[in-house]
Image (spheres, rainbow, N blue to C red):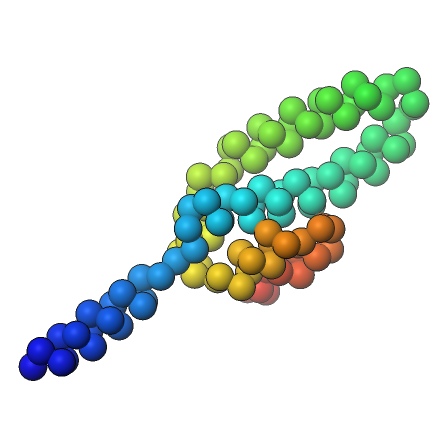
Length: 106
């Protein structure tokens, strides 16, 4: 009887493993930053030279606001998915293409 309880307890503990809040936040921030700047850099490059720094500052503020707005919900989704490999991949990504490749298609 005791051995069955131990097995059940171990199964429950193993089933509850999730990426940490910190790991998810780091992965999501990296993903958001890479994908955001991919498009923003195109817009900045198309702007007149004299307006680029002002536009870059505005884009930086916009990026920070978007990340802040969706981070808590996204971290919850990340932890619920229990995708340790995806989190590790997004943390290691250095380009938007690499970051997108980390997400499993639904």
